[in-house]
Image (tube, rainbow, N blue to C red; front, side):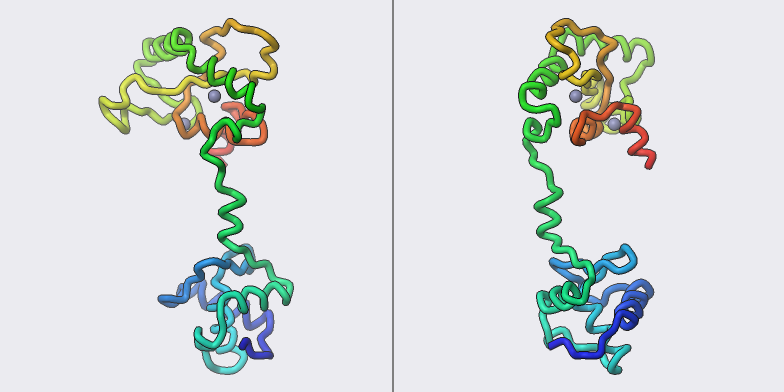
Length: 206
Ligand SMILES: [Zn+2]
Ligand SMILES: [Zn+2]
């Protein structure tokens, strides 16, 4: 049972206490986050501490459960997030096709363009010859610097024009490709529309 007499002021004092001393061992929340001032707190532990400020003692953890705490806060108009639900919502499918914003056919074509070994190879060779290294156009990642010999000569080619705009065009030029690391390549394709390299650069810089 959650006692009566706990107020917003008590919850905020509990949150300040956590900001100051952290969450006590064993009192972290497994599933729920209470949002106060834009930060996440364990709902049960907040109630335990709020009870100290309202009634003089920490409410023992075994007196109530996490679901009661969550529902208590929701009923009182607070925001509580269920981490499992958040995870379901935000974790993307690993399947690249289903995540591709332009649809399945466009995905196939885009990938086909990027896997045209002759042209993408030329793009990489030209860059390597010009600069002496292959670096991601977005973040500057260099596979050889990180992976040594294993990474030498590796970078991914990304076709810069959204496939929908190609309209039956079949030939591609070297200049139509950007060279990006695997992480940035995935992120270029992850938004609701294909991102440009310039935009993703800005995303990284925040
Ligand atoms: Zn990158
Ligand atoms: Zn691509």
